[in-house]
Length: 515
Ligand code: B12
Ligand code: SF4
Image (tube, rainbow, N blue to C red; front, side, top):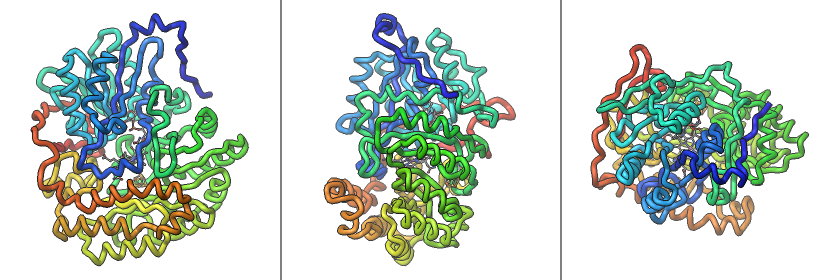
């Protein structure tokens, strides 16, 4: 049985004045980030999930999405601090955000040192010690369901002690003390959780987009990934468990969404084929008419074409597939446990049912002109509708990251957008960036075909942002001339964790620092 969010009506407006004011902030893009923000900015579902755990009569939660406050993100933060006067401010984080989160939270403390500052999110779950900053009070490591509500209720009651809550680190004098990782057990029933609270999106709600879909909603139906790719850190924080919500939960949530377009943010939506089939059938039975985009491995699609057939009927339009490479040797090197043959079969299966492939590839650091051309040729020959090409970047929390740590040329977090080179390349940097940019161009479907696929208005709408993206990648060799920021960050504080328990959620428990 799915619980529902409590909803506060105007009758309790008076009481609201005394509510604990919590401000959630999504970090802005840095000018160096090649995160393709003209193409994708999707709702911060993590904050909706967290807000849903709080009693609305006690907490006033607001969102500031600095990705959409592009003109003056710092000004937007200052205005929000003035206007809302939060009791606590929480930032989310990927690796590319480490420095900006620390800088922005320093501004929050400057504004009012009594505001409680905290950070959570993907990077905080993998390498929390990167946030051991004197301007940060708490770090939430990993999935926060078990501790977040208790933590917030304590703050509201004026209690700062969290030493008994799992998955947290807190500043104590000149050091950070970790309470150890929070790992969700298989017994935990995700269906008991309330639906994400989308009310917090406020004025941003209609502004989220993914390629030509706008406004788009997001939905998570599974946590973790059943695969164990060596280069990936997504399966590690929850110790390799793959937990899922039930088809009933998914249907009820979909029925509440007014948006026509939905992005499933699961790492591998077809990770449990039977469940994916059950969800598809339930959507069909319920007569829900929406269009979907989801992530899946290619082997699941290659083995289960019937799943794509069903999903195409109910509105599946795009699949984001980690194809990674055009070569089996490279796939083996990445321990992807997959093959080019599976990739090819999956692309053909999707095509047969009119579903577009969003092919996610990684350019190798050893690439020379020949390999760039071969990858372009592969993408063109398979007629991949939406190529998405990043640069191989060791992911914090993996063995590869620890192994290559000492060879890294750039450790400023801004370069960890998976489109910069943090390790040495075979080619000189300028040539590499030029070939990378040209590859993005060559990999596109011919304009006439794109118009056929998405229509002239959308094509025209996309073109300026695509060209801006292309030029920023092509000329990104300039980003390495000057560090992303002039001013230095304060040194991080010492990190202490209970004996026998690792603070980081990684398997190795090794703590690494990105400056
Ligand atoms: C959906 C998704 C996207 C969406 C956008 C999502 C969004 N809202 O912005 C799209 C498709 C656009 C996308 C694009 C990119 N993505 Co992406 N994406 C994901 C994916 C698959 C799921 C994210 C998600 O929604 N999770 C569900 C939420 C609920 O989980 P969560 O964020 O971890 O939050 C929980 C906790 O961490 C915690 N929490 C989070 N924040 C906070 C804050 C506080 C204060 C507290 C207390 C707790 C807390 O609470 C939540 C509930 O427990 C992740 C993989 C993953 N599993 O994280 C990759 C991932 C985040 N993406 C990644 C990358 C690199 C990118 C790109 C930069 C790639 C590229 N160069 O093209 C682009 C950037 C595009 C852009 N313009 O921003 C990487 C980041 C790696 C890293 N180490 O930083 C990830 C981890 C995948 C990976 N390993 O490669 N992505
Ligand atoms: S299938 Fe994707 S999400 Fe799962 S472990 Fe491999 S790379 Fe990571």
